[in-house]
Image (cartoon, rainbow, N blue to C red; front, top):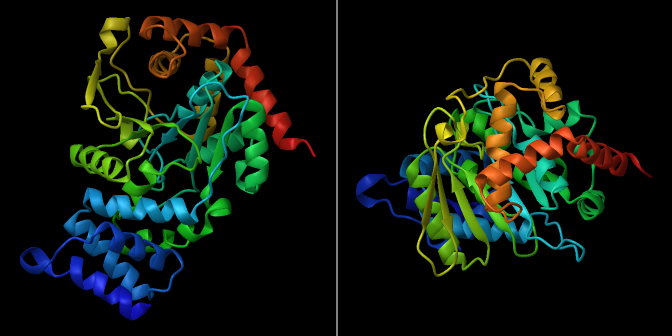
Length: 350
């Protein structure tokens, strides 16, 4: 197998004049050989850095996603869920500058009856920013110890699920040390944004920083002929969190249709241009506690800004303003706090 993998390194690592891209099938095989570590450590490191320098193609990402779909965990559809589940894809290496709010937005979404799935890992190179799992753990919800059947039961009962890859997809986690050793984000980081750990039709929403990432992702989705609705978000630090210091830019893609753009401006909704900064984890959790109570703050404004958009965009509100109003009502009425407590009870029950 290492002889077979050497060919893939040679194809993408031969430089701008003689190097080529992998076919979709070759990329799928290369991903499989790396995940099961049939390729040698030297080959895996060489492939990841060469692929970063070359930049992946949509066809290569499609092949790698094929392998993730084959080897990775998937939550199953739940008959009682009447709305299309939302899959939030955010950068696994976390946040270091701005406060992450997708966990509380996910609670608002599920309190409004929109099933939501998150996925991620522990603190990851190269940024080593705060990951989503630490926020949930601070709330007393530790997804890191759950097997897939327990996550499935919580998802069925509450509408919210979290795929923690070190536990549920250890093959993928086995490649984490290479990120630290090469000192750069490999294309695996883009792959994670686009991954859909769900067996049915879904609305896949993921963040990005650089415009070429969006184009590669859309090519990959087209090649895979996915039925998923896809929304791309030029979000904060590659997350799905909408910025307030600039125009929020989203792209909506469905099979057979042209890409639709959505542009939102904070001032149209009476908001400042402040993105709440990330302070220490205890300070973040203290600030989030005030959001649960609906107390005015820049962080509450960002939560309403984001939750309002996603409630509207995912069919839970008639427009952006209605979505922001609904999000505030769910917070003030304690429906979001009650949803968090429901998840805690489901997680801790025998």
